[in-house]
Amino acid sequence: MIELRGCFHGGIYSVDPSLVKIDFSSNVNPLGVSKIVLSSIQKDLRSLSSSYPDPECRDLKKSLSDYLKIHCECINVGNGATEIIHNFARMFAREKVIIPSPSFCEYELASRRMGASIILVPLKNFNLDADLIIEKAKGSDAIFLCNPNNPTGLLYRKSLKTIIERLDSSTKILVDECFIELVNGSNRHTMIRNIDEFDNLIILRSLTKSFGLAGLRLGYSVSNPRLAKKLASGQISWNVNGIAQRAGIVALRDSQHLTRARAIVKKERDFMYSNIRKKTQCFSPFKSDANYFLIRLTNHNSSTEVRDSLLTRSGVLVRDCSTFSGMGSKYIRVAIKNHGENLILLNALESIES
Ligand SMILES: Cc1ncc(COP(=O)(O)O)c(C=O)c1O
Image (cartoon, rainbow, N blue to C red; front, side):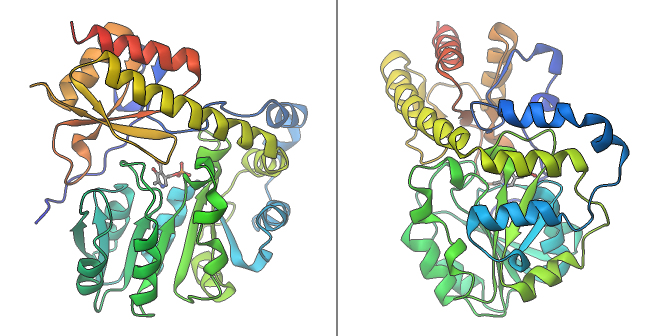
């Protein structure tokens, strides 16, 4: 059985922020926020700051509806995807919740807050064990499925659909696609087009990752209108501030920003994978579909020691994966950033070998 632990995140506030020169522990768009988003916010900063925002996020929902080609009634907007994870748990995580492990820790935290009993189902070779999940999920209220998964960076291809098809319709399913827009060919992998087919299915997305709006906090869910209404009933008023709403509307118009980021991720991920393999002995990278990847430590150091050593020597922050349930102390995770930054990470990894 996997031990349940606290919920720990990466990011500069997970360590002494003054030591961090480059943060590889947060997996956001390598281009950051787009220029047109920044200039739109700057232009109207005064009114956006002093007026109440639209509590229904109507214009933003209309932009999301155009972007996704999905009806507005199917969309909920949250203060980051994290708010929606907690609303989902509040509404549906009553007694028994299923979470494949390792995965994003916020699912555990949100379900535990609701007093639900949590069953962590171990991954098999980093993939979903469909039969085991179906068996464990009997009589469960809710399940969280992260695609691509954090921290592994791998897409669940066939196994995800198999599980969704075989789960009882009384089990509410949250498919977390917060990183999918940075995956190549994401349209082939998303479950957004399946919300009419499964009336227990909710898809979660985040503009904090795909459009680099982490500080502004912006996420959304897509489901059938009945589930969307139920989720919205748990939401607090004015949950999404006016600057974030404006940033989201403008960001969604700038599809080139995402296209360019996706191309950088693909190219740089290949570059980092092959160079870490070639140039280091103690770091063994894993293939990934996402804008981040795992590295296994093959020497005697723990992931916490390696993170601290990289940080103090080079100002490079990587994600220590020992705080993911079921990961042990031999993995770190790194984000894909631009080429110059990736070279700094590569040098830092090489330098702590010597
Ligand atoms: C898989 C996954 N889902 C959701 C989130 C939260 O996203 P947001 O910043 O939109 O709250 C994270 C953050 O790291 C994540 O890794």
